[in-house]
Image 1: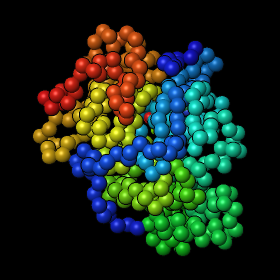
Image 2: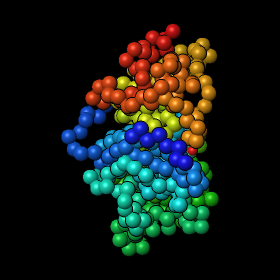
Image 3: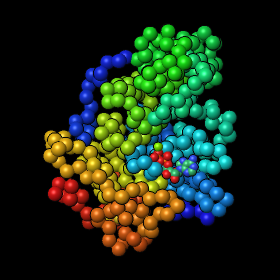
Image 4: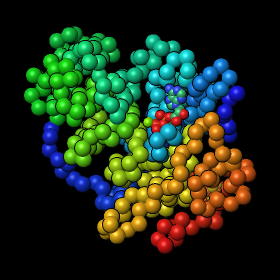
Length: 367
Ligand SMILES: Nc1ncnc2c1ncn2[C@@H]1O[C@H](COP(=O)(O)OP(=O)(O)O)[C@@H](O)[C@H]1O
Ligand code: SF4
Ligand SMILES: [Mg+2]
């Protein structure tokens, strides 16, 4: 059975970018005339759990990412954010997970059908990835310097001594003090924050065109978190990278994103520019996420922060119709019928909700 409804430096940040829960007024990066760096179309990723049971952990996901742009992918735990990024990186667990449909184009080149060797060429050089847990990508038995050097030797054919110099430069770039000494540290000799920086240094050592950051700050304390965000922003300015930032923290999204993709139960349920989605969420799930974070100007004690009731459904027992309907305060019989499609509300705003035209979520949120 396939349960797959394929609907077809240590300084604190110099410049606060976020005010409360709302993004700082900054223009969304205008739609570029250039083709997107990364084009994900109708991506479908399947896990074969047993011989007879498969689930669709990513079900028809589409988005574009342009050079210099930051796209945030948000949603509660289990919504398919990490599987989306692992699908792009070609890092799905072998024999269990596979891209079963759709397309991923990197600078116009289809990458879903590439061999392991071809994907190894792309990883690190074209797309770098940082994970929530640094030890996912740092090898405990090699020094941090050896690991960065190995990456640049593989992708850029540098000599050993030049690769070591590059490793020291990268550690300096990400604000690790005494980089010439730290380069010989093993990961366990570093603090959590330092390891996170070392992982970012490794991901950026070949100056990838795209950086995928999967919950990179979740495990960090707020000060280091702010430093990391500032660091990534600075590096993006310097290198012109596109960033895909995966998080369940909307405060962080307000700080870093140009565009936002909201995922729920393996699907995109809303996508828009960051200003638009914070000020005018049109899908009840997005509005629910917004309601669960503090707003500027109201003390947390005074305001009513509303968690969305219930939990994300298991992919093996998805509700009929709108996947969000058992948790949605606006659900009617219509919502339990046909599954809603992603519809265009404007050139840059897409919504998956059968009732989006008639709902006024801002009014509801204000009440
Ligand atoms: N290795 C795996 N094997 C089987 N199912 C998986 C695996 N990894 C993820 N999944 C399924 O995909 C869903 C989405 O996972 P994930 O993308 O990690 O969520 P998140 O949005 O929290 O990053 C999980 O709830 C689970 O059902
Ligand atoms: S389709 Fe219905 S249940 Fe789903 S989000 Fe819209 S109003 Fe809620
Ligand atoms: Mg995840």
